[in-house]
Image 1: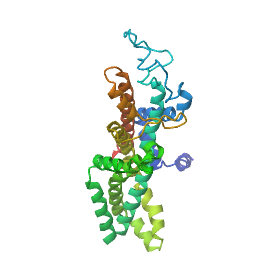
Image 2 (image 1 turned 90 degrees about the vertical axis):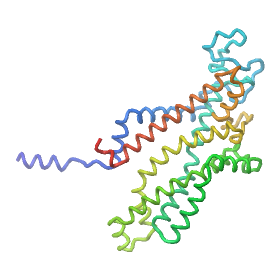
Image 3 (image 1 turned 30 degrees about the vertical axis):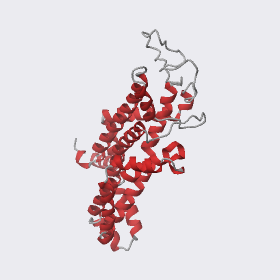
Image 4 (image 1 turned 180 degrees about the vertical axis):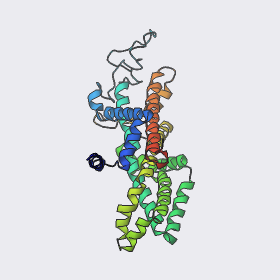
Length: 321
């Protein structure tokens, strides 16, 4: 009876899935958990910017320029304004409101181009790796040509060339930035996916599916693509901080997002634009540069922690830790 009871107990144990184990390892990583919390706070702040901002980010107030944060009281020439917790810029605009809306733009720049990057990279990688032959050579040579260009210089060239067109002015220049970042960023993902496909298509389960006459599209969608998701997720998690930094650099150089004065614009400014404004007033208002730099640094660091945690959680070689 005891043996039978033990056998019944063993049969009721539910096996843990690969994704369940990965989630458990991710949550056990303290740095990754902290990064997830910070990124979640950023997302909530970006979504709730209209509710959290006490002032319109483009509203200019007369005789209220370059007000320091409320805790800076050692400057008799410029006393803080209690209505502006983090101070104001040269035009009297509330800096806290502009930071909240700027955070929204930085998150969008980190996420939206990923849709294009993943679509291009995964599609080309799957097609090249599975088809092989002349098509593989053609796609990979095109990939190498695009990857050979210096990323930042190529992005600057595209943004400068199309900046004054309707395409460059759409959504304050965000559409052009999305496209430029995506064009130069999909190549590494395509080569990664191709390498995974070359390894997977030689496996027995793929050979069995082909022998049964399953269409190529179903093999790619049901058998190969799910087994490449782990490295894709890790690559995307590390790519998001790079895109955020690239947008900030482009805007700082003057070829990124265009500032807006429309009070109804949901994307009036970016953290890169705030860095540009702060750098121009470094001696008179150093807080204008300090706050956006700290926000970008914390966001990029948090996303890097999440990427490290995902790499450790999804890499089977790390499962023995």
